Length: 478
View 1 (tube, rainbow, N blue to C red):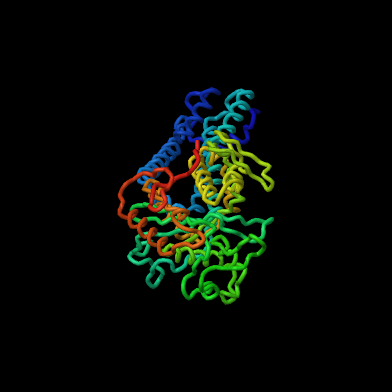
View 2: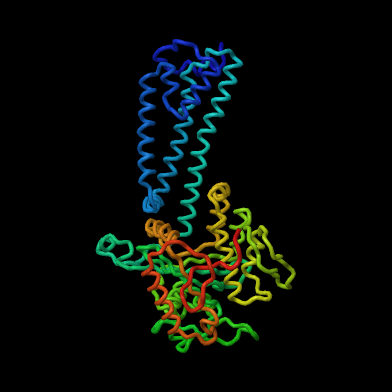
């Protein structure tokens, strides 16, 4: 009895092949069915099945082509609401293509071949079916992992951020409620299992024009003193003349801007017993300093940042000068062009040796810019699982998931728009006695200029104190 005859004999054959199919032709027709479904069935005499498969394939190609031609950032944003469905459809498509290859092989009657040829063609068809299904399986895994990451990070419930009418519908179907800009507080923190509390070492606000995407980045030094709080707020009642505390130990101060978050976390009694008020308090505080309404915050764990860099295989930077680091200055990143590991990139961004806060801020912008420039799609896809897992551990935000469908197209728009930066650091301001009115005035001027500008393109040069300037990065990202 020929090899596997009982299996093949179960296939209902409308009519026998008029011409026997050799081993090479059998594999060729099976392979052709991968890109032209129904070809093997037509060759085998299964005409109705062959034409049905081919017709369905044409319909699918037409739909996919139409979607691809009309795809834009708005569709990409809405697709984030369909990730579960996309995962199921992708997995089902992989299973369907797997079954198609196997059935295409079977209808060509391999049982008519010699035993050795049956084995060889069976192994080849099995391998081909796995190769065809593998990309679908990987895509389904990526989409599922993306959904898990998004659900973990953007878990905040949607609040009354923008005006709505009864029933929860947005006013005039405008996701921004008629507003011209959205403002996001971008923070870099240092929380961890081996650290007490959390300090916001990096404090920036991205103010984005919802029509043009033009963006102003406003940077506040971590060491701002006498920070004011919104009138009537719990922190303003506790610190009516600004954030001032006695030294926790000689030369060690916690009453600077970086300490606002943790102080609010440590004193729930100020907020009627409500806990975890650090983020909301810092949003209100920074908004009051700049004269803006802060819509959301995003917090990146700077210590966990190294895991992202390692997952990407390192960052290539041209380091301008030697960077000494470590508790006892035992480490060194030599000047020159080199690939930095996650740990080295972190030390490069955070080293305090022979450095001030403003130099560190420039190095941090350099590292983040390099990360964005060097995270090419191939690398991200090949290490997607590690990157997603690291991202879930190091990122916090109060952006509700429901807003992503509108924020994605806005982010795409902002990527191709004009980005300017104002860094409120000496000599522009005195961090020990800041001129809050001047900060608000410069902020308003920068935003007004950004809103009026229609120019495109992101220029990467250092910001000039005193006026909005194109965003800069400091060192060179290769």
